[in-house]
Image (cartoon, rainbow, N blue to C red):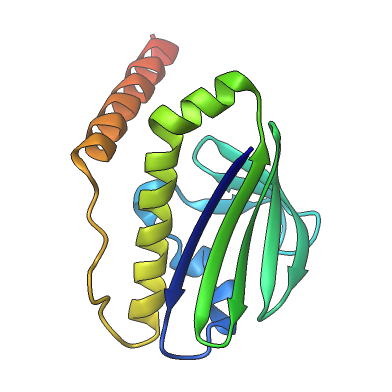
Amino acid sequence: MIRNIHTRDLGVPAGPFVDRIQELWPPAWGKQEFDRPLGVGADGGHGPIRYRCTSFTPGESITFAFREGDGTHTLSASGTVVRHELIGDFSLASRIRWALVIRWLHDACLEDLFDNFERAAGREPATPARWSPWVRLVRRVVVGLTNRQAQRNLA
């Protein structure tokens, strides 16, 4: 079982930021896109991560179920606090990938998103997110692999 939680006090009502997830999504992590307006049944994701919206209460919470594996991630608001919770019961191989690679990328992406929420709330984050050397290395390798694969497809 994997459980990963991020919270941030925005200093203003957090509800509207749930609804603005696509608008404030950090572009470095691939555009968050769906096959229809955000709501229950919308299929999409960002980059290679695919999910479907299973629950949406505007101004309160949105839940997505992963297409692969048995897991969800929920963005919710309570007062001035925004919270993201990922819960999953994944295969052993997926748990190993999570521990070595995905968790670090996920955490960096979420902190970038929460920084964008704070900026949209009218204040600069007290401690802006910084990617660790590991996150930078993994992103460099993944982008390199993606570029090489795209070049092969063009040949």
